[in-house]
Image 1 (tube, rainbow, N blue to C red):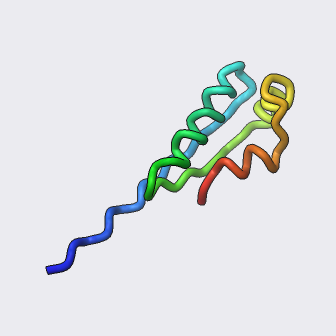
Image 2: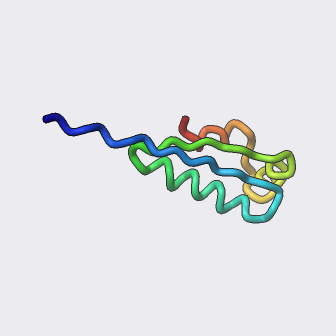
Length: 68
């Protein structure tokens, strides 16, 4: 009997214009380290402004953190 491959886990991280955007970025960084974890990203217009202002991160940099 062969062992079944572990199921792929999926999570969607949403970042809005609130100052908690740093937590969304950190969560994506943490989840990238977990094998079998697929992450998706949703960011509002205000979220992009917050990420740029508070984290100095652009669209490509944040998208690169999601793994899908």
